[in-house]
Length: 122
Image (cartoon, rainbow, N blue to C red):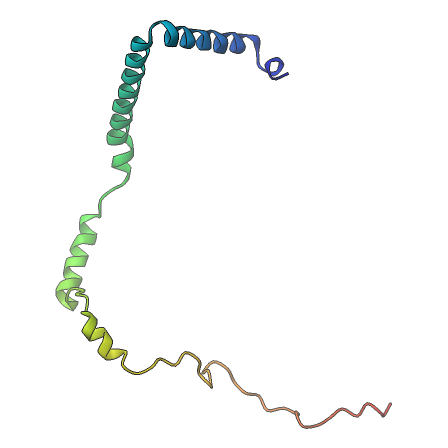
């Protein structure tokens, strides 16, 4: 059923390739291994060339203007030197309260909360 979907020429080509591979594997194993190692080597060289010529130039390094701006910013504001753990612990000596009782973005609206509805009257 699978063979009926593929054209006859492709099926013939795949079957000849499999026959040749099995023949080489049985009668000329050393040559087959040499051929496979050479094929992997050639593929690695082609990949390295494509990577060096096509993919690597696309990823540009930081532009010179950006580097100049970073240097100027560091000169003006100082470099970002990380503080030691002792400095961090001094600032965290008091406990941090995550939940605030009165969040500043919420506003209480006074309404008619105490009045009950009179359901008995129609």
